[in-house]
Image (cartoon, rainbow, N blue to C red; front, side, top):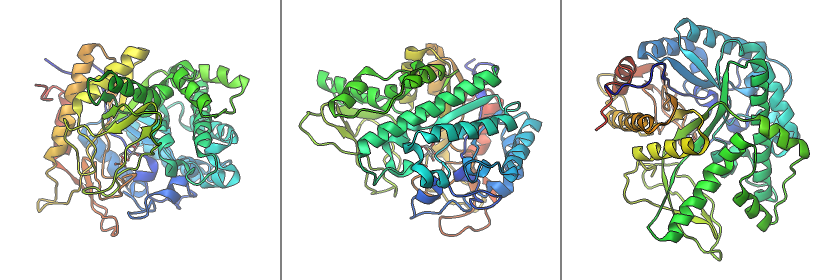
Length: 470
Ligand code: BG6
């Protein structure tokens, strides 16, 4: 019988700015993501209204059968001015965690999901300044003091690799020396990650902590050795640059040489090396949505930044090009969703094997899911068979990866309920639960179970036995 290992964590994910709403209530102040989210769509003031409906949402998690729930704690809800504790913020997460525990749902907490307090951005440029590392440490200490005895699984930074590529989420679009700044911000984020890991190990040695990174395996566009090399370069720049720093605390030599070649000298201090070494995680968490393909790109071609399709059908998207290393290209062998995101379940097995073979650390899947346009039908539900197929096929590849030898701790798809999509508002829905609102009308905000809710519940109750693997 092809069930999943005993104790496998069956979860679902959200993040604070995408689900809570109440962006300026309960003592919370603005974060950089509140101020930089795509203005075409809904803003962060209401989102899924989880801040007011958290009890109902935990009841739904219980009915779904979740054994774990991944959410993030909002930094500006806990420390609205960056320094002073907001008791209302602590009380909100206290109630949530207590109720999760009452239902035996393991709370799994992300410490940073894109929401630096705006006041710290204004004070010193946010992640651009080394000061942010101390301020993040302060935030983590407060969170650990409040919830460290209850939460046993922590994620440090969500999708650092994508933040690095999407300037609007890190607020470095218009700064001078953009290339230098983005690598320097990344260095500060690595230090912040390491501080959180170090603190967790000192104070809660039985808890587990690791980064949640956004990953895509890169396939060569052809058998041409130059394309194969390009795919290897892309893996190094998009994945191993980050994971080597997390796990070994050292800069990938290829990226170091690249930085030297373009004259970027980062402010890396002697004590940083020691701290980074102490940041070795207990596991690596992966957010997997898509695979990518890469082809050779000559040194005399021009540099190109990614542009994400935020509209869906017919929207613009532009792929990355790094002269001398790689150009990301379309892969005609795999289907895509309306936003052009490829649907490639086998890519997940490939990625799990690659990461596990390189680091031999347990892996958790913290995001994976299908974003589509959806409406309630007359039965007040949504027939999301496409999502069922998507998740079935990805779980089948997880099961096969476990047979390959990968130590997989759990699966936490995106998302528990419809939330504000980072790029495309409520137009792009991912949830097992429909939230009655659109981008421009907040409507009833009532919750309706989609077909996938009942299906995922059966998956969980059978410990994955009903997954169709063949
Ligand atoms: C990840 C993020 O990038 O992917 C989530 O951690 C995000 O915050 C999810 O919502 C899906 O992306 P999008 O843009 O489709 O919402």
